[in-house]
Each structure stands twice: as C-alpha cells, then as structure tokens.
Amino acid sequence: MSDVIKQIKNITAGLEPVDALRQLAELFPGEIVFSTSFGWEDQAISHMIFANNIPIKVFTLETGRLFRETYSVWSSTMDRYKQPIYAYFPNQDLVAEMVNKKGPNSFYESVENRKECCGIRKIEPLKRALKGNKLWVTGIRADQSANRHDMENVEWDEQNELVKFHPIFNWTLDDVKAYIKQYNIPYNSLHDKGFPSIGCAPCTRAVAEGEDFRAGRWWWEDQSKKECGLHEVKQH
Image (tube, rainbow, N blue to C red; front, side, top):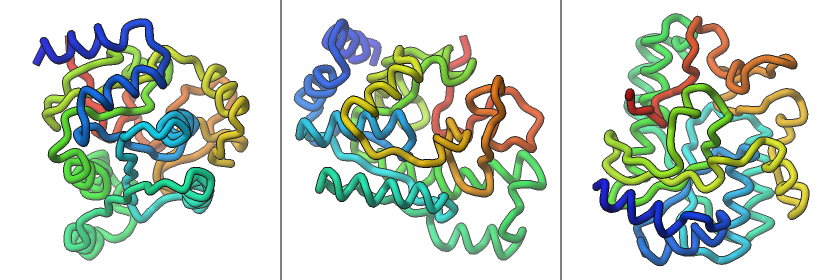
C-alpha cells in the first residue's frame, strides 16, 4: 500500500487542489468519494468538484441530529450546482435500541456513551459509504487541531482500508474563507456566529475568541483530542 500512497503523492505534488482532484478521479474512476459535513472546508471542495464536473461522488452522513442551518446550506448547495449529494443514514434499529435503552441524550453522560452514539450515527454509515472505494477525499486541514497536525495529506486509513487524500491540508482558515468569497460559495451561517467546527446540534457550541478550533465539539468532555473516530491518527 505504501507504493499507492507514494504514487498519489507523486501525482499530486505541486498541483492545485482542483488539478489534484482531476488526476485522482482519472486514476480511481468510480472508486473515489468525497465526504462533506457542509463546513467551510467541505463547501470549498464541493465547489471544486461540482463546478469543474470532476467525477467524484459526494456524500454526507445524515445523523438525524444536524442543525437546521446545516440542512439549509445542504439545500442551497444542491440548488447552486444541480448535482446529487448522497445521504447515508444510521441503522434505524441500532438508533432505536440505543435511545430506548439510554434515552435521547445519553451522550452527555459519559465518553463511552458519546462514542457509542457517534459509532451508530456516523462510523457505521461511513463504512457503508466508503465500501467498494479506493480513495476518500476529505476537507481536513493541518491547523484545525493538534491531532490533525500530526496527519499527512495522503495517508492509509486502516479501519476503512482505503487511502485518504486531504486536498487543502496546508490551507489556512483565511485561505478557505478567501476561496469561499471569491467564488460566492454557499456556506453555513453558523460560521458567522462563532462555530468554526460544526457537527450534530446537541454536541456543538460556539467557541470564544482564543479557544481551540474544535473546543465547541463535545465541550462537556475533559479531553484534548476532539474527534469522533471518523479520522483516526496513526501513533508514531
């Protein structure tokens, strides 16, 4: 697998994100997907894909607990580009079993419960979305968190058994905002209200000036790594 990663790094080295995505779509026809949660970064990449008719399937995880503002930008994105965004839902039986047993807000009670909820609403649907593909495109940037700074722009995802590519990994948030403004790309209005990172509504709050980028995610937990398990980092 290291040979594939080396090949992707060589092909994409020095390319602008749009050109890199074009090259990878040719290299992995019908086996490359992009996951969006409709944040700034993902909206920028969706624009690259849709506006340039790059044959990459775009999907999202519909957890059932998203903000209404997220649904709004989802709709406006489809209206703008006239392209499908494929929704993957949690397994209904698993959600029902969890809620029937522990109630609708069990994730506040312990890290274990929160990870169970993320597993049912996000991890399991993600595995279905990625199945049969060889390359997963994401909107991860290095400066989003210390955890993500340890990643590389091309890496092997052990749990999903495919390669991940982060086309704007080295962009700053200002770079992303400038791109959004340049192309008048629809974006989540919560970003203007102090939400740099947006997940499920019960698990996301605005952050104060000077707080970490992901401090608003699962804010009640006393931990440094604000991740749900979608993007595991290899320990060196």
